[in-house]
Image 1 (cartoon, one colour):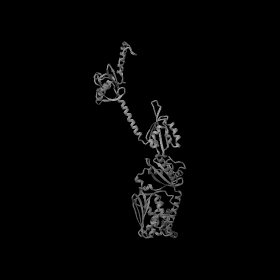
Image 2 (cartoon, one colour):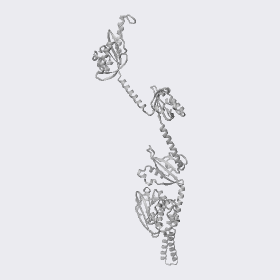
Image 3 (cartoon, helix red, strand yellow):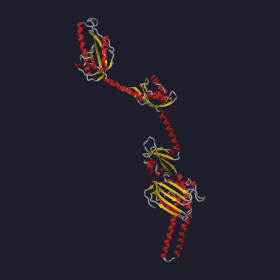
Amino acid sequence: MLEHTHETPEPGHGPFPAPGAWRKTDAVLRSFANVLIETAPDAIILADARGTIMLWNKAAQHLFGYSEEEVMGQPLTCLMPARYRDAHQKGLERVRATGHSKLAGKPVELHGRKKDGTEFPLELSLGTWQSGGSMFFSGIIRDTTERKRVEETLRESQERFYQVAENIREVFWMTDPEKNRMIYISPAYESIWGRSCDSLYASPRSWLDALHPDDRDRVLQAALTKQISGAYDEEYRIVRPDGATRWIWDRAFPIRDASGQVYRITGIAEDITDRKQAEQALQQAYDETEKILASVPGAILVAEQDLRVVYANSLACRYFGEGHDMLGVPLNDVLPADVAQRCWVYMRRTPQTAENGYWQQDRQFERHGKVYEYRFFPLAIRGSERPQTGIVLWDITENKRLGEQIMQAEKLASLGTLVAGMAHEVNNPAQGIMGLAQLMQDEADLHVVKEYARDIVGYTKHIATVVRDFSTYARQSDGDEETELDLGERMAEAVKLLRRSPQFGHVEVVTDFRSVPFLRARRTEIDQVFVNLIGNAVQAMDGRGCLTLETALRDGALTASVRDTGCGIPKDRLARIFDPFYTTKEAGKGTGLGLYIVYKIVTKHGGKIQVDSEVGQGTTFTVAFPLGHTSPQGGPS
């Protein structure tokens, strides 16, 4: 209520009514004022010059908790906290002395005190007037508790907003829909764009000046057409004043009023230069890796847990995909079922079994007339929990054919040293058969003839056994299938074959064949290993000495050892004895391929071969096969 003074005018002058009419009008106005005061939503209080309450409406009664009877004639100080009372009394004295109040005519925010002693914020509009030579006060009081709560909530919300917007690395911005006014831009704009926020407030479209020329038209069109719909999501480059280029990811979100009209557009602009550089580096690394993998002389496949191909280099597509893309193709469709199954098992191997030689060996399979060698390798994709396995495959069709020929040539060369023994083994029984046949021609006694016939059958079986052993060893191994083999038994058969050679002489044979698992392999290949090793041992002893053959389980591997008491191998030659065409024998007594072929056969089955030798004391060759390539059956030979 504005401050005013009122002096009663003389009746009948000016616009005022005559005395009779005045009394009637005054009654109407008083009645209207009473209704207005009592129905007002705000508390209305009237007080005299001493600050004594003279009038109290219902809103005041509800606000302060006092009834009219309790408060009439009481000082205004009963409605205010104690801290305001001294200032209130001094204010009353000043008004009485000067006739003027500094607070009148403008709202004042204070605190009131209710009957129960609780305080609450209020807004007071104070008015003063004089009548009959006395001063009076009126106060219109509004409870601002809810408004204060809303204001505090808004202030806290704004404070949180500014704390976030002013400290995030991204640029937060807000404009009008027409892009003619920049309502807010966060400080990150200055660090990313290299331009001041004030310059953007002054010229709201100046951010476009920093756009890379190749991106400007596209981004401007998108900003004018897509931001208002919420479809604005752009990546672009900016050029800073220092000449540096930065990549920006900019998104916009329209804000609508109650009628659904867009009246603000907010957005987030993020500096993604580091991400773009990382993506470019990753793409470059991927391209370089792809070039390397494409030039690798082997097919490479990568499969996930569901055994579907997730990567295939160009050679793999040519071998198994008929030149087409193989992504998503089931591994069973391109590789034999047992290879795919082995891949599935490999993915689920434990760290303990991962080091097992079973998984580290190369294996083979045939497909469409081609022979492929393959090996699994683990893949560790950072950030991925999905297990993946790689398979590298080589087409060894031609190499296998040549290898078989070399092995066969070496086998036949070693047989040449056994020919004399074979001739002796065949000639003696043949002479016996001839003599018995001649005797049978002149023998009339049928019983004696039957005796001669039984002897002839025995001689013939002996010849058949000799020929079978030689022919079995001499035949090519590519027709053999893998089977369960007793290593002790194969070593004994090799000794049996080599005994027929005159070089075997008087060599003593000692065996120590332990109960060990069977080895799953081709018999002809394992026979060739032991014939070569035992044959070399016999030659090293020159027909005299002790040959010791052993089988055992050591350090989780199936081992077979051949030890002789021959001349031994010099230390400086041990490192090369498995090289092709290298021999420690005299010229003309070896091809230099025997130990090389032994090494290839052993490693093909995931095994290892070790040699220990002392000159003048002898040599020991030990082959070891991983248990993963063995069968649990087995026993003493």
